[in-house]
Image (cartoon, rainbow, N blue to C red):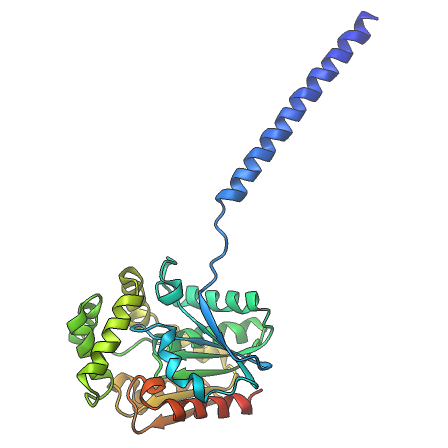
Length: 299
């Protein structure tokens, strides 16, 4: 009888200890869950409600509002456009990261997942033109083939922008500097546009960008080189490169054809005579028309 009572007491004690362990484990699990960072989702705006989905990204010295001038010329019944802000800019200004092309490409696909998009088109401007190439290569090599088509506007090629030492220093000096930023906008548009426009661009750029992010992306688009992977992939995803003839040399036809033309078997080129680097603001009607003609061809 005493043995039975002793065993009963030991059983009760064991159950209490076990319950304590379970409770403690639950607390630790809850703590880990609470401390785990949720996946980053970029900020964005939506225009249109059409069946064709289009994800759009901006450049190094702007945010998604760059595209505001073309909105009225887009077809909202055929297309749904999502204009996303990369980490450190606009609606994503407070999002920190490594600021690499792989990270931005991953953020882009994650946003598409959040939107429930299985297949879609992607548009990238300038440094984001490099990002959409990374997306296309990864998408093709993985066999996912989610991308219906790619549009690269005045893009940085997969081997980075061909800048000399003086140009690199000038670009570095533009980070957070209003006067140098205005000079950069003038140079990117053939020094044809008003100082008021350059001032407006600089004001918007400084108000919506994070300097830490700009420094990170500076290294990305000037030093990244995945051209070997791009050439090896032999991807067949349709690509349209749109350039402006008033832009800087590295964004001109000679360099773009020599790079994109060498790596991508299914690429086409269009060059706008009266535009520099910001065709979405310099020639919005024509740019919108070029984009939607290409997207319609590749539904």
